[in-house]
Image 1 (tube, rainbow, N blue to C red):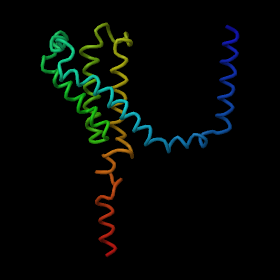
Image 2 (image 1 turned 180 degrees about the horizontal axis):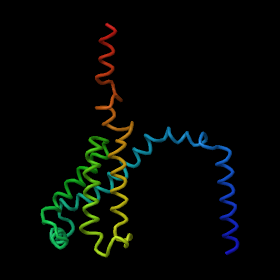
Image 3 (image 1 turned 120 degrees about the vertical axis):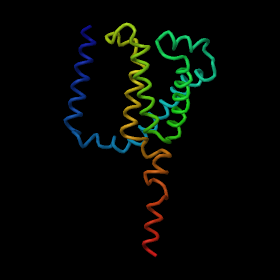
Image 4 (image 1 turned 90 degrees about the vertical axis):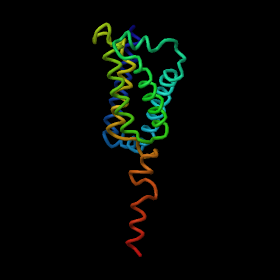
Length: 173
């Protein structure tokens, strides 16, 4: 036990020393990684939502409508959830319509927590931690957008040779 405490103490001293030397300036290089971080977040969320959404549409999990009805929702909500998760996951992978897809999926995860995963109360975090993380990640994407490595950026936010570059060419002529 003393060895663990010593390792912990040394680790804290090393981190404090590095933090004191680099300060805020030393970590600014992480700002250049934001487009890559948003791409990774979108890809991971896209895979997760495709993995969980497609079976709801393809009926690969027995009687999912019954499960939805047991939790007080109409049976057709299984198809609504499947469509949201499957197509939302695909849109995340493409980086297309990311903000509205992320907002819808965040709301869906909040409804899932409320209606399905909070059966044992809100203090039983282990029951709903996965949809909570998905809701938070989707909310973050809804607020900051898809990032520079996305079709959203290319098509609508001026990342490609879109309207802005054409307009500036015309002004020069």
